[in-house]
Length: 166
Image (cartoon, rainbow, N blue to C red; front, side, top):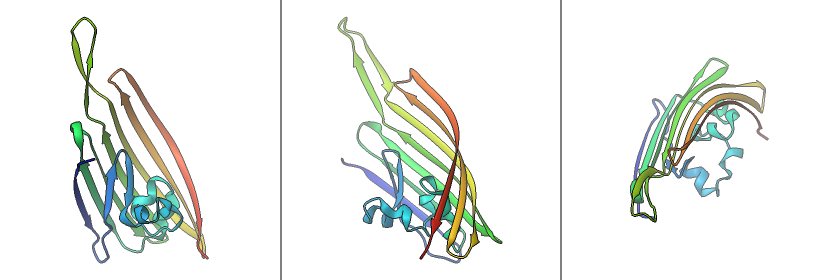
């Protein structure tokens, strides 16, 4: 797929995270290099969508923004913020995916232009390390999803994650 990619990562007093957003997936370059297995490693703010405990391992304040555009108007992007505050790490994020426009042609010669799939997800959560080596986190996510502009769903879900470092 031919696509352009925008990456921006700013971490005051720390190191940035190169990240990507494609087809609704949000992950860092490190997680991609690990074949998507970065969730188990932690220390990466982009992992909060798949394991809320991962943000508990972030040592400095982090802001990560990424986006991409592809063929047929497809586009995706996200923004994440995480910051240690005493024994807690708090985080918030927004993720967006749009598959682009499709054209439906009927046998009577009429046509209709529709957005194939569109998803918007927001989330906010906290993480802490209750005992050395163990990190616990939880994230409240809200999701709006639309398919062919006909089928829509809104939902909210709590994610809870644990991570143990050896």
